[in-house]
Length: 183
Image (spheres, rainbow, N blue to C red):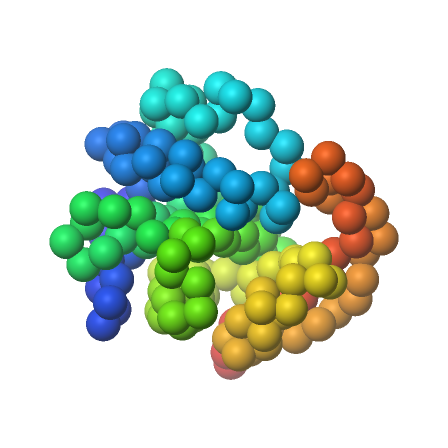
């Protein structure tokens, strides 16, 4: 199943991450370190090394093999540069059939509609190929851009989780949203 997880849009090549992507992932992480820091957990220096990028890809591939996570890298059309990424993680089967969606985009790519361009077909894939019923995505209340993106993709607000995740070293509230598979 994992070999066929790939699609193209007008401006992107999106596909399941693979071990050969370690260098591209490392370049993306280091180039966007300051840009992504306010939206992510604290990262130690090791996170920004090629070795850590290789380990990350190994862990991601294990997650795919175990049907727990599907990390997708967003490349330029020639697949030379990672422009962003998203992951369908914490996949739960059985009566729940749900996962969490997390995403990030390079600073230079913001405001161009690329994340929406990538996620629209990815959500169709999650509902169809993965057979999920619910995709959940949560965002910081101050991240209005993320809120608008999710709303434009059909996510509905379901509540507010107080002190939900530790982001940049601080326990932060998160707006909880979800999109349900179409009937």
